[in-house]
Image 1 (tube, rainbow, N blue to C red):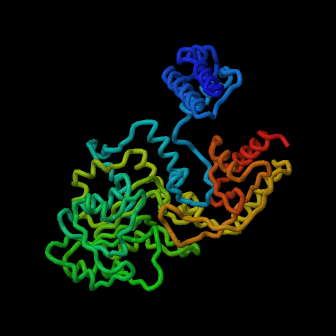
Image 2 (cartoon, rainbow, N blue to C red):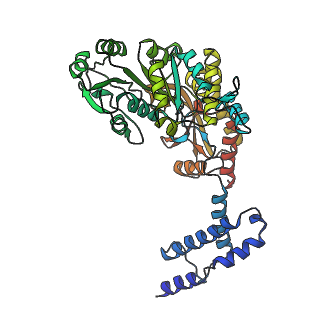
Image 3 (cartoon, one colour):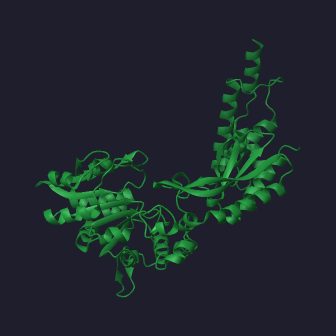
Length: 475
């Protein structure tokens, strides 16, 4: 009974929105906070306090809430609403193309282009030579053809869109023959069969999950067939008793039956990574040279550019694709286009591309360089600490991420930290809640930071975060 009475008294002591608005009007902290945010924050704070009282999480012997309790809630709510939702963070996970963390970091050249083009007008769809309307695809088509060897090229907003657009153009209402072992899920629960169905193409599976032969494709060809499709399984590996049909074999079959051949590389690359002691991935150049009529791939995975779906292939088919009404719905904007152009220009010199495109640079950094880097970060943390942190360097494995190189564990070095006065889960939560957030992983009761995905400039951010953690609980 006494408990109910106390709860009712607390509920009655909750201030009204007008009272909180009056308080905010007098507090200098809220001077730059718009009125709409103040109102929403007041309502949110009151509702949170009410829920806490009803749940029994908030009690008070005096039967009333202190002004400080209420004001802290309001300021916290306002602060969260004033913070930009899309935020910069520190990726210490060791996953290079991290889908949840924005995939590839852009090269400095791409960032400079975004700043320049975004700040003013541009010739996005204006031909400066003739003074008339032009095509936005001209900004990157010549570059893509130069690098890949294709006759023509264009770009849409992502690779799923590229696949959808190609299938809709080439094989709508017709059968598309594809190996059962290549019907991949491309992320977010979207699967190749789903994209194919939406395009209006009819799926014709052939072979078994682990083994498909050229004769399986050939037996399936009939008058209703519109396309032979190969999907590179870039996001998983199939080992053991396996057999797949090469792109060259499919091209020969396509020529025999006068059928177009398309390859979806998923995470495409212009670089032969085997030269850098990494697993070999098929390059775009090789797929084009094989004679495929269409090759699609992503711009923001192993390519290291912005999110985009790139289509290369024969001029005749690309012209048809460009005329498809879906093209407008899937087109990319000027900022994506300029970032992609700047990234592609770096590929004219592979050495420069590997040095300046962050994704390529992180993928190819030798383990001995990472060991030295991890040692420096560990030394900085030890110097900043006060004996309540256990810090060491250990070997680990990074990942390419983004559905790329699924079987490749990249040798790396990690800094491991244990803070003696709080749990490792609390360490992770505090770093994740910081400004900027620091995202790592937990292993063997230690907070792990893989230096492969850390920029040198981020070391100071990490040091400050741990210093703040120590200061929050004096030793």
